[in-house]
Image 1 (tube, rainbow, N blue to C red):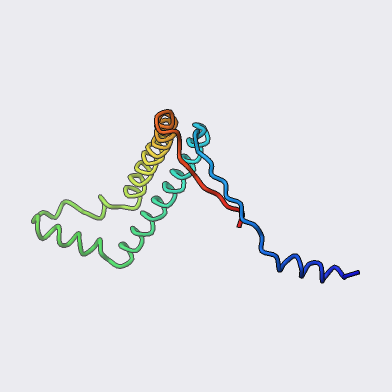
Image 2: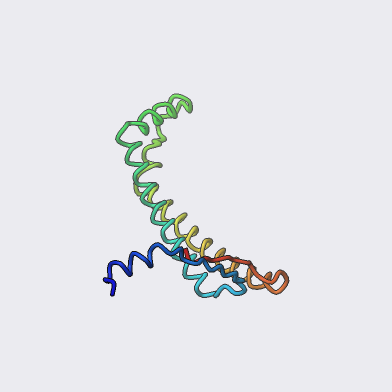
Length: 135
């Protein structure tokens, strides 16, 4: 009678058989695609808002806005327009939030349209052939 360790050693020396399965993707659930594209759009919106804040902070700390303001005043010849008041943090963040919301809506709608188009094209093409193995 052999021990459990010897039985396990014999089992591990055998080569496992690989089984391949070929499946067709013939349907994408509409609401799952909408939810996934909404979450992707939400992540992109958060990234764009945080990125705009970080870029504005870096440009403000390095004094780029002051240099641009003096260059703008030299070129235009007017002293009444202040570029720093136009590019304030509130203005930049407000614009960034509006762009992020529009991006969220467009990304969600694009995911829905892609799911609908795929489901319609499956009737013509038969679906996407996908292969799987159990390695």
